[in-house]
Length: 236
Length: 257
Image 1 (cartoon, chains in turn brown, purple):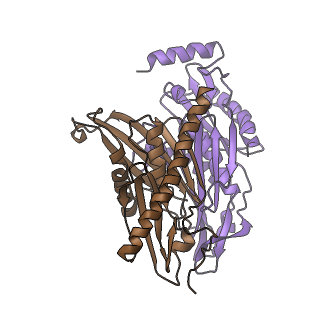
Image 2 (cartoon, chains in turn blue, orange):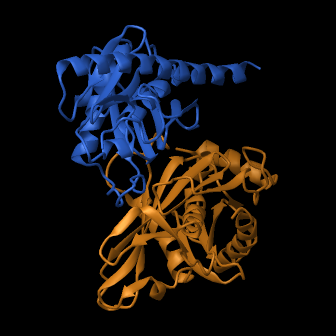
């Protein structure tokens, strides 16, 4: 049977429900909570702080280090072994690359900004949730940023072009599935992360990028609101 | 290095108060247990003590029993001091502190016989349930041991078996069968600073602790595990006094369950 209507009842361009908060981890310099459907990400930012060992330091500007980690009980399958996998290393890498373009670390030579992303519960779209959480935590830490980074996965299930695939869609068996995580600077419409698993035509990709742009602008407004809310409360 | 801080804390304690205004034997507020916070786990809880927050999650697996106890399943406790929870924690395999934490939590559950390991047997000598308990710190504002032990116990209490057809586990379907938690071991860490005893230390206080004793006890006051930590020795009178405090404060933590 063709995939004509989403099993989860969403419209094709509709994301799962999003919840965003900042300042949730008191010890961190900046922190956030980002929930998208059943995927939950926390992010904490420490720094800019001195970077050791010293040979890693860059005397011209600060560096950004990201670490993506799934908690051992966060997968709907077997326990995830702690300590990082090839997958989590790659996600850590592309997360850093996704965030760096909005940061200006020129003023922090020899320093590091550490971003730790932890997922207690996941169900598809975890790297995108992690990137959204990280971007909010960086803003919460007061770092100079020219935009936030919003991220969402778009894709194709059977012949439908969809935003924010959930588990049932990623695991759809009666047709082809392609999944494209995208991160962007919503105010500049620039893409800072794109990956793709699966097959599709160039025209489908073009349409999906447009859908991602729209979704990212919506996510941006939710993140923006969460950041402002924290300071509303503090002003009282 | 923390000499001045220690003098200050000691002076406050001699006036029966602490850096944050608490009495020596006061826990911070709130003490809160939130159950089933992680849907992907078979059981989970988040514990908040003051600003300290800890997740515990349970995953169930089927494995082979140890050859010496072919009719028993077992628990495996892991702890991760996540670098997001404290600026001093680093990435990498569990260090000494994380290992001690996991083992202290393990001991309380194991030795109180909170779980009857025989009930975890599926097929003697071949298949038993393994209860994998993982602790992940979210914010370390002090006293991770007590928060972690409480979170692990709460996670066990919320655990339901996944569907198992004798061959493989369907983690997407939980049965209504709950893990039978027969005892509720509560850990209270009592710390000695100079000549005073405190509970529930903050990060600042942890820097100046001379000695600590984690007292794990059951609802009826039976002791089931102890762990002495830090550098200075204790007298037997110290230990008995610390146990009294530990037993008394356990009642308070128990109410949060």
